[in-house]
Image (cartoon, rainbow, N blue to C red; front, side, top):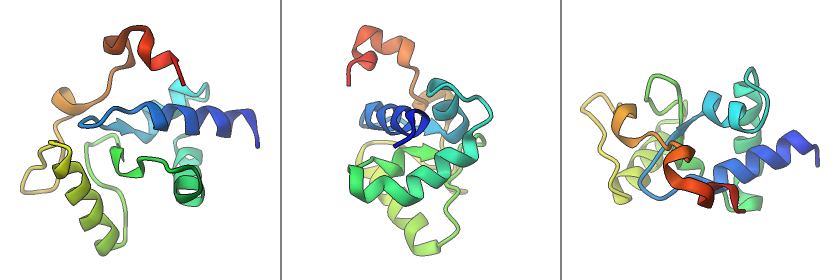
Length: 111
């Protein structure tokens, strides 16, 4: 497995329950600020194998970016079960729910 892929998987696993992160945020944390599409690819191909909390990763607008309506519904339901509120337009308030590793202290570095 490529080091960047390992970093992405590690970052996604650290997103706490009740928080979300954007594709671009995960890419930056994993060391490739321009790698948001790679994050999406990794999520798509490796979520099941690595038990990733895929539902906690959304786009930069605070939206569920999954094209399949059934999967988008599942993502919204999983987020709501964790206490993440979605607007009527299925948007998430990033100012309130976006994960900020700095707020987690050194805990977020442990994996």
